[in-house]
Image (tube, rainbow, N blue to C red; front, top):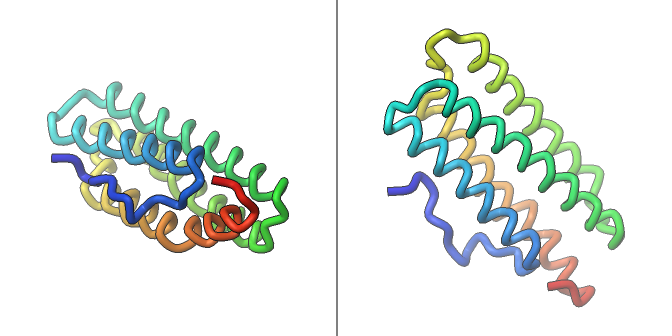
Length: 137
C-alpha cells in the first residue's frame, strides 16, 4: 500500500502542476517502498536524490509560471519552497553521513507526506484559483 494515495482533492486544476505533484507523490512512495523492502542505502540514496532533483525542478517551473502571471503571493510561496528545500537537503546530508542510513525513518517520510499534501491543499490551491481565473488550466 502506498504511503500517499493521490486523490482529486489534491488537484490545483493546472495540468502541469497536477502532473508534477503526482510525480512527487510517486517518488515519495518509491522511497517508502524501498525503505519497507529494506533496500540498500545506495538505492535509498538514489531515490532521495531523485526526489530532491525533481522537487527543485518542480519548484523552479512553478515559480516561473507564477512570476509570468503576476501571482501576488509569489515572494511568500518562494520562501516556503526554500525552507522545504533546506530541510530536505539537511535530511540528505544526515543520510549521507550515516553509515546505516538510519536517518531515513518513517518520521521523515511522514514529514515529506504531510508537508507536500499540506502545501498542495493550502498554498498551491491558492495559485490554482488565481491561474484558473486567468484562463490557465
